[in-house]
Image (cartoon, rainbow, N blue to C red; front, side):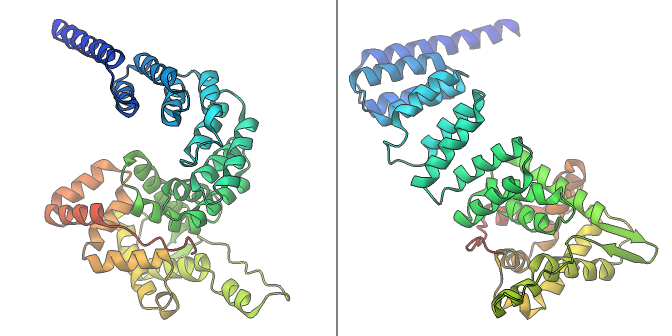
Length: 361
């Protein structure tokens, strides 16, 4: 076995060395050489990729793509001073996208310079004011400083700036779900699970956080249940316009989620807060929401999503996905017992694109 393993390693090393010689010795275009360098990085040959990119820049020092990839190569090689040097040469000069500001800021942060990182992100926002990615990076910095309110505010700004950017939903939901009033966390968390396709670990984590919140906020006491997901204090001001008063009284976290869940918990008559029980609660909750014209006449993205799940015909499988996503054995057991429904649901979810609207809930 060891001999076979060494043979594979040696073959890979020879292949990469040959590729590097081929790149350095031919007259291919800069774009082709950059593509080869990226392939080298993907195969772990970062040092060779750096050599190739330096060769490209020796011939054309103004090649922004090569400069960016060189900065990225140093970044993944944990050489932050060099990454900062390379990204600094193109930041603000390349109208490609906000990613340069993001990588330069990340390099400063990884180099132990969070204040400088924050300056870079904010400078990037001046050029890309609707960059949810940069707002999310500022949220990360605030979270490291344990300034949870500022971190949350940046996330919510990011959701409104780009409702399709899932990392802002994950962080906003996580912060809300670990607060005293997690209703908004339940909303943003479910929207995150609806839109995320690549990060399986974060989907599991979101499912766990949501179930933990349910266990904290739903208390079974004999034949009755107490539900507390939202702050029931409604703040009004004599300076409010009629529309602002209406919005305060129709807060979705309270009028929609809190009251809907309270009714659903009692309708479902659950005796414990677990995955199967919460599936029954969720069905009763959606029954309540879809029957109320207050929420369906002008549905927010969350209500639109609930309606889409219901009309898909796979609501039961979806509910198990949400409530058991963190518990692989339990979810696998249910899926194996309902293979047709689960497979059809999985196909539907993979093709599903939720309507995220304008980020207003």
